[in-house]
Length: 69
Image (tube, rainbow, N blue to C red; front, side, top):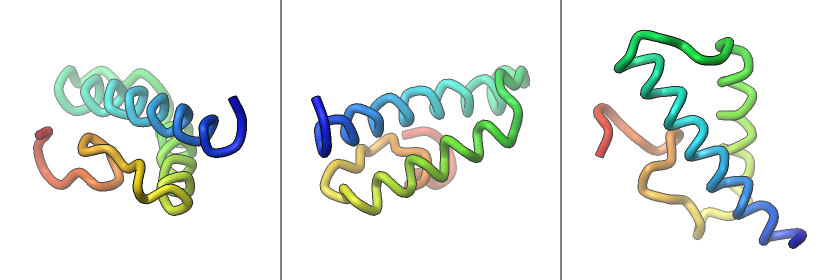
């Protein structure tokens, strides 16, 4: 898998991973990674979503507002 397929797989992976970290931080009050690492992944996801807006999922951290859906 390469190109767009790899990007889409990475987007799904980043979304799932970021959502796990968000839950651990905000719900469990138990951060699992340093803020800088979270920020790096968040920015990477934003960049991929800018290239592939058609593939943005409903649970994408950059597009969620407020509580989880």
